Length: 90
Length: 232
Image (cartoon, rainbow over all chains, first blue to last red; front, top):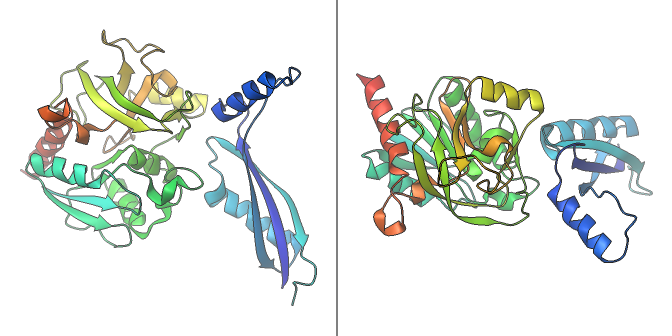
């Protein structure tokens, strides 16, 4: 078994109103970034876990997203990376 | 009528709900979320609050509590289940109701009285109201904005599953009367079988004159009457 660090991104689905993103957008424009035309605010989730392989870790992460980490009605998810952690394996 | 008031860590409307049920003559019992089994209960009530601190998404962690398996089974067997506020969010997360409740479009926690129009009086929960009756009931939530994909929303409307809608004093479902940005001013809806109701407003906080409104009483008397009728 190897230790993996998974990075998962969860964000509001396209088309769904993201009031948080809208508020951040307005604030960025107010700070002078007038070129900003859209902001979406989501979550980044880091998970350290043991798995047989990077593929198995990714597969587990996908299942976690479907079952808990993301709400399919309102959010999209993406497993961004599954990196083996140096010196943490057994 | 014996009703279970399921309590989660972070529930804060459980006592109000317990008292509301008692007020209409029900034998109310607190059931801790780690308990199992809902045999012997005539109805299950999921209270408002901030179960598990709303971590991840409101209701997302509570949905995994041991008792929720029994709630799902109870609901699928046709048992009446009422989820208020955080309870509504749990019902959506558990898949007993469609859609999801996301952040209010105002980005603020909205805590005030709203007006609701009763859209259906043929449910277990609304039989004692008049069709189109306007109720004054408090809301208190940060995530009450009902969302679903377009097909789901249209199917809900076509099937007449919207039970309560946010309206203005004239009973019109205007944008101004909508406290959270919910699609079509939806404040409460039932499942396909009509035995599961989720709603954001708090009828259990509108049970006594001294609290400003008694418009919530009808919901609990409706439930009591429906259960009494099925028992005969």
